[in-house]
Structure formats: C-alpha cells, structure tokens
Amino acid sequence: MLEAAGLTFEAIASSVDEPQVRREIEAGGGDSSPEGIARALAAAKAVDVSRAHPDALVIGSDQVLALGSRIFEKPRDLSAARAHLMAFRGKAHVLISAVSLAQAGATVWQHAQTATLAVRSFSEAFLDRYLEAAGEDVCLSVGAYQLEGLGAQLFERIDGDYFTILGLPLIALLQKLRAREVIDT
Image (cartoon, rainbow, N blue to C red):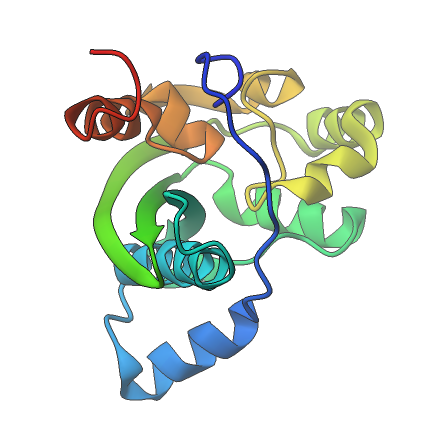
C-alpha cells in the first residue's frame, strides 16, 4: 500500500513478541479493548524498530478482528479458517487497524480506524468451494479472506474505509506525513 501510494521506505521487521504484548495487556497492563490491543501492537512494533534506527520516522501497524467480545487470531490452517468463517456467517464483525509513528524509541503519533463487515449467510458448499479456490492464502489474514479477491463474495455489506480493511488507515497516515512535511504537501 505504501509503495502504491508513492512512498519511499525500507521495510524492517520488528522483533516484538505479539502474544507476549497481548498477555501483558490482558494481565492489566493496558487497554484490553480491540482498539487498545491494535494500538498497543502498532506502537510496540514502531518503537521497537525506531530504537535500532533512532533518526528514522518509523511506521508500525497492526489489525485486530473482533466478533462481539471475541478477538480472532490468524487461522493456523484451512480447518481453522473454516471455523472462523462459520463463526462470521450471517453476522457482522469489526476490523480495527492502528498505525503508529515512532522516532528515537518513542511514539510520536497514533491513529486507529474501524470498519464493520457483514458476512452473508453462505452455504457450506459455497464455503468449501471458496476455501478450495482461495487455498492456504486465507491463513495470511485474520479474517480468512482477502477483500481484494475472492473474499469479496463473502460479504453482504461493508461500512468503513477500504485501506482500514486491508490493514492500514492509509489516508490518515498520509495526512500526518504531509503535516510533518515528510511527504509533499
């Protein structure tokens, strides 16, 4: 997304232990709402990388999917993806995407956006065909779908920003980068 938007950047993976961050939040170390978790993970990733590159403005992001009070993780295999999609069938879930900017080991800006996705009441035969056609790639997404592909057929309604659904509130990030004069205004 960043490249398509014309940004020049270097991708550096953080060493953040995401399950550990979640455990710390659940133990009372922060906001345990889905948005709080997304914000904490995005900030942890950005801060982690910015400590190793203190002069750089580092972008970190994360996304959390919640159905009611249940927070979902990426499915580990096609069987888990099937279970996810069956849980979503006929219901609406939310995707919360958070982005954080960090510099010199400190968060300098954060933003989160939410999109609501209503999954249609599909048949089990449709789900079987969908999983066969989409394959293991569905395990790369917390929702077991990719909206920009076959996953679009799962939905009856979507409310929210497209980029938020893809995992990054891009428009807000671009506005902030312009405000900081990092990119052309």
